[in-house]
Length: 476
Ligand SMILES: [Zn+2]
Picture 1 (cartoon, helix red, strand yellow):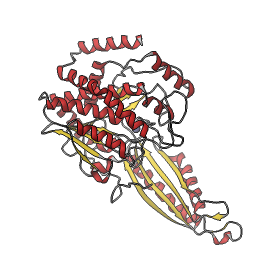
Picture 2 (cartoon, protein in one colour):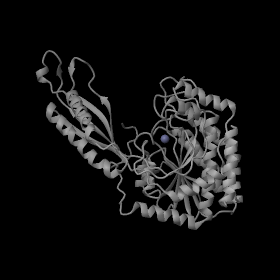
Picture 3 (tube, protein in one colour):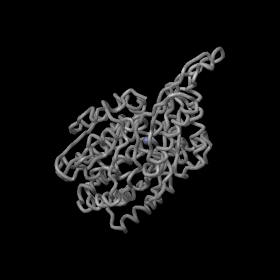
Picture 4 (cartoon, helix red, strand yellow):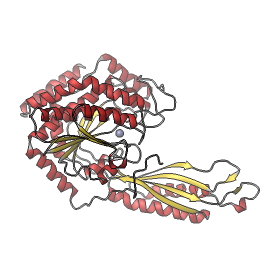
């Protein structure tokens, strides 16, 4: 804790030397987040306990939308054909600044707010990606900006986007298709993390599709010669994919989830189904692999003498990084200084590290220096990617869990329901609120961020990987 304090003082000194100071609007943004802090924590905890999964976030979405409405935002619910998607708007004219709020949970990882594995509700979902914090923190930042506009201290429009189903189907792609970011100058986003940084790394583009095989059922022993096995096709298909792995670039990932491999041992199955996912650090690298992996389904179907069908689920772009935006965010992180933790919180973090077999170094909320942007980042994928190809986007990561915590696991759920998660959520609200102040106050900064966006986008014509028709509410 003393190390953190010392680091805080050093960063503060560095900020003063570099001419950064906390102006009155930034102080007011911080004060606004403090004023709403208990309510934001309550919102986060309610969403955490509800743990509603993709497209079923009815109550979670309502909690956020209701609080925005109560705070004077005009809320449009059920946008882009998704009952749980909404837009909350306040103010008028430019600049138009927006922020993303996610709130969906992951199935099967229910967990109490304690550092050893114990389900809150056995078999239920849990917030293993911290999206309960994500939504509440972003709303806190939007409200801070709104209050400054209301007081006449800032001019422009603030929008909060309630974005459902990030963990499955990628709700934002339908919101992008609806043109909801048209006219927005700069968008902000953050994500719970095991470290604190202005995030200038991209993510992986991906595509999801379903492969189904259709054969002929028969008795597995009495007349197997009358059967054409859909599960044979499935096995040949996955064998093909696994041979192909030797010949793909190291940046490519291929995953599959067998959703139906037949029901019983004594029937030649006439039906099988897989969910297949192809990723690469660039959409342009992912597309040829996607083509190839689709072609393999035809090959498997020929071998097993069955029919096949491929259905697109959806796909997303890699994140388009914005370093000018990242630099603005970084300055505010340095002004805020790192989060400090109590001895109990450090012990909680160390216990999680002990249980998950990691070095017991505790919490790390030190502010990381702005990194070089890697050509080929590691990590996962996010539908923030599609937003970032349609509007200049600033990303932030804030510590809400101990270092090395396995993500999408019970350990993240545990931290998101107690003070370690709360502190990160409040910190994110402040850092984004301060960066919004910069954007509202400084048209040159907005232009710099937008011109970098145009330059990085170049000639790329955004083309969503999204099937025709409405979003797959209730589908799989
Ligand atoms: Zn997430």
